[in-house]
Length: 253
View 1 (cartoon, rainbow, N blue to C red):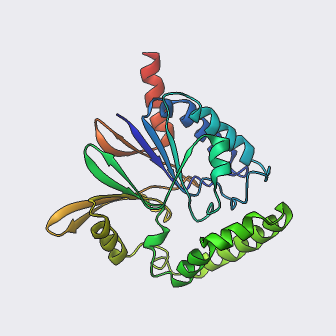
View 2 (cartoon, helix red, strand yellow):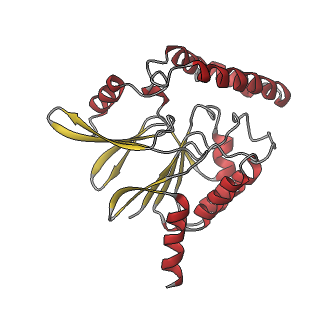
């Protein structure tokens, strides 16, 4: 069985090569995966609804829908801090399954906890207050019934404020905290944690109650890109282009 994990693709027309790479992944090796997980921040611009036809929204939706339409593929998408407002309309358009943050899955008879990762950055108090506000069901409903024009105006203002705020924060503030990681592992009684958000691709070994746990941080797709692969070779990070070429070589042989 093969399971794939990506996060923080930030797909945008400003980086058409990443959209092309995503298309190659979804029409190539991902077709053979038993499950494909996107753990938030699929788009660069804030998601404001399926009625927003600003490129590359419709192109990405089409890629996802074509992938999901295969009888052998299973696509799971988690909301990130740029796509809090992904809803059932989006799920219907892409034929994906929206999953909550966090979500538990089973791999090799082991529980694995999936998160976007922003809830682990508890030292960023201002962001956590903002997250609590924007994910409030009432706030989300009010936003959903606004006109597209108003939603667009709000998202642009928030985007500008968010970018400015991040630049002013110390690097350690916008990273996960050790306490949050340990508390999460203990709360859910898991030894494998997979998340994105911080853009700091890594595998972290963690000592937990005299046992060993591991935290996988998915890389971003701005300058580089990565996919976390779980198969008979267990977990490993791959550059997406390398993973595609490996798949293509097996298909041609």
